[in-house]
Length: 367
Image (tube, rainbow, N blue to C red; front, side, top):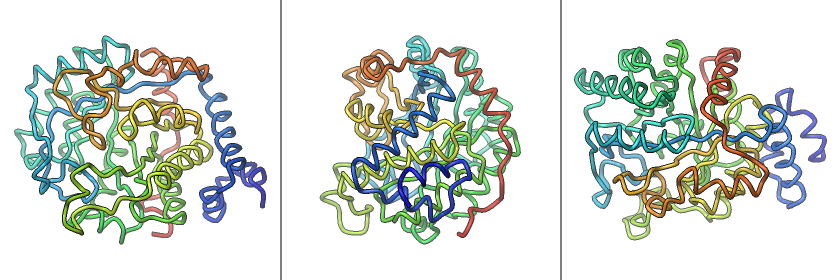
């Protein structure tokens, strides 16, 4: 079957075999056709508007031993910090002043995450962020229980972001040792039940194959995720000198990058109404153009400079040189005939997202 024939079936949605075929394209002209179809789908939905997310990571403490994350609990070289509430609010106000559409409050999984005092303090921070900025808030606290989710929703959070990173249970256990696949998935179902919009995500270049990626597409669509993220795995510098087994082996960079870009395009085609991010947290500003060409309609991980904040995948890249700012990305948007959406554009998009059908099933298909 030709690429064009495969693309003509995207609204079906594609079968697992069709997804695998799209995710194993190798000829440049076939991949270019895939990306062009994704851009056309984006334009039909939102014209030339691109949404922007401000990223605030107030604490890098974590209780997990994920083999892909620089802030894993047993990485002695990780940059650890905890910002005060005042510092966090100042960073968010900086981002709101730039004109971003949403505040992405990323907390990792703090060792205290299940304690009532931690949940109460986080809920209060969400309230203050909403009041100070007037913007929607995405909460990324890792695995959260029903009580914590209820507190964060009552405080005004609109989004719950939590990633499986893969929907292959065996690979999940290697990426996230000691964690429960089922509990992490159930937290997203609980968040949907409580009225959150949910973001789900997958890592590329961590040992998966095209069939695994196809299963992830089906799982994210089946979940009813309103935002679906694909991101290439980029090991932190300290992984190169670490003993074998502590980190996911580094993939060929071009393989991980190609898979991310093709996943962005496929996700756009299979669920065109969803938000699909282009993260600055992988290759910085240099990688933005290709991700937008692949069909992304959100630029995530805008980070205010010189406020002591770190990224996640790339903890320092393009932060303090102001490249990960709204002004920093404007030339790339202009080159592609795109423009940054205003906060009111994003509020309208949220209303459309909230009207989407609910999740299709409780567990990923075929897993």
